[in-house]
Length: 121
Image (spheres, rainbow, N blue to C red):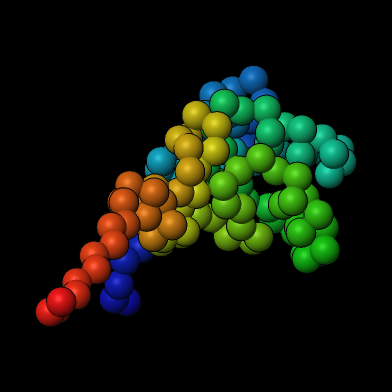
């Protein structure tokens, strides 16, 4: 088999008091924790100083859309983990502010300047 292979570390039997559930982990790590309701899941997902991305795993697309609208992150995914496409990287909370890795963000660091040239009098 050719191509890249990624090993994902799944942590089970975790609880919300563990750092893996509230810190940003920039490795192939996911904490799996059961919740009693969508409301509990939303509250726990928002209970973090960070807000780069969230991942919602469900077979119900309408539920994913409803939950995704309430999750305080720059980006959220349904049934997948973060993919590395810098132009989509929006940041909130202590993950950073704005979308400086995408064209919209880069435009905030520039200053347009007009130039008007008239030849002759």
